[in-house]
Image 1 (cartoon, rainbow, N blue to C red):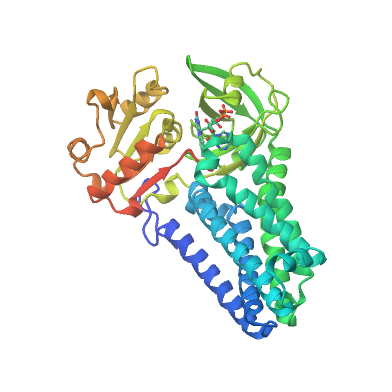
Image 2 (cartoon, rainbow, N blue to C red):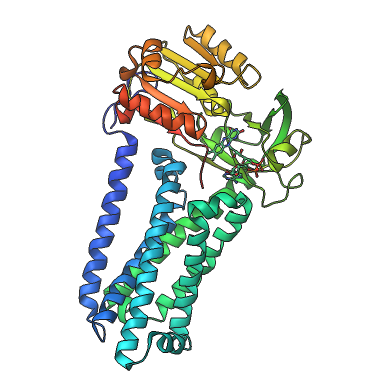
Length: 445
Ligand SMILES: Cc1cc2nc3c(=O)[nH]c(=O)nc-3n(C[C@H](O)[C@H](O)[C@H](O)COP(=O)(O)OP(=O)(O)OC[C@H]3O[C@@H](n4cnc5c(N)ncnc54)[C@H](O)[C@@H]3O)c2cc1C
């Protein structure tokens, strides 16, 4: 069993590394099984169709891995974080897209060679075969969603539009499942193949349905969240405190986030992620949001007693990952929210906090952080001002001067993407081991 040292600090294999090993072994084991099934499934009618079978089987496997990555399995999410899992999901998605395209092209070329017809004629003929038509439909949906997910197209779409388009993948999933069911040569070639694919579909779909629907519905019925109060923190930032029943059994940790809905006040599809800005307790959960768009603009007028629907807790920016006795917490702008809740849980005396903001108005929750730092004798540095005016606390020499023993500390970081990536570079340059760096990106797409 992992030894607990002090203040949540742990020895042994870091949780994120353990999770990567488990996932790596799981992926490898499935690849080995699929290679075996491919070899035992027998050849296609020509070389192209044999290769098409190979890519088809791997496309099915990648699609099921995709489901597992977004199933929000708590053990994995707490160790790796939804931001990392979403990033992997993005790259695995592009791998799926190319595997499907290759499979489809090979099927058309294979049958065209068999029939001695052109690719266009074969394509039209195949669209009249139900199993092929289902495959084509699934492929078209994956290609469409993949195209809209490319960085350039994605940046032009509103989040809600992109998300609605992404939901088409559930349709693609059902169609792909039917296509697979009607395709005997690869998926039902032996009883072992049949059992393997059946079990993998049940496991992948099951974890998705449980993680995305059953658990959130159960939690909301159990805890019955309602808005307790709404407090302005600054002209553009508001805190919402939500209460509910049996919150001590919610197992949320400081630093984590929920996806919040306020049905009745906002449309039901309006679901936004916000970190806990105070340590959760058996009485309430608090979010603190900067007004940037429709959802956040509506928070200020939310009445006490409004119903809240929460999904979570999610995220890996927690003390589960503590390794060292000393810690450095770095918050930038609204990235202060998870840092503020983590600080409430922190027991070590050896803590440095750096809060980076443009000005005092942007530095929300600063009084609370100052109160915690004063009561526990921590060092608090505020870095207010613009980089253009020479305020650059995260340049390697400045950060090393501020925290000379930085490489011996756990470093928790949350801030705007540009600040976070520059800071991660600096931490690397200052020799802080990767396993001691814990960062949250306010970006899941
Ligand atoms: C893990 C995480 C934790 C966050 N914690 C905080 C926090 O504590 N305080 C805070 O002020 N902000 C936080 N954010 C950012 C916050 O979610 C967005 O600012 C908010 O959703 C904007 O919604 P809107 O309708 O007001 O604005 P919009 O104009 O609709 O959205 C602005 C941008 O916010 C992002 N966004 C919108 N909706 C979602 C969604 N459902 N899921 C993911 N991203 C979305 C998109 O990039 C979008 O372009 C967090 C984001 C993430 C991913």
